[in-house]
Length: 130
Image (cartoon, rainbow, N blue to C red; front, side, top):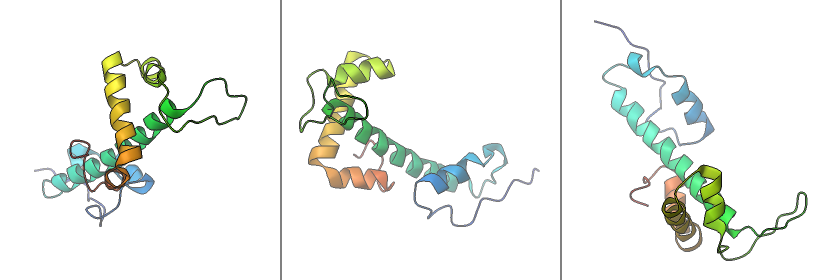
């Protein structure tokens, strides 16, 4: 029998963000007691949802930016640029289909479904539900 490490108190209710991320990074999963491993899994799921919301926000922002901005200039449009997903594809080494699909979902969440994006960011729902 192996005695594992204690899981920090309040892990189950800690909202996603930098504090939860740091706490999870400090855990050795092989040492988490059986009674607590599902709690760690759900905390990881909340944190992942939070990060995915940030990724969707960044994707939507990239495709709404306009080219030929000067140093430190922000040039933004209200709609996605027709070549925006190509920028994403090149930056992330994604296929054209993946870039178009993900940026379309990102725009839908940011522009049409901000409450869904907020729920994802708070870890209340996961990417599949979004």
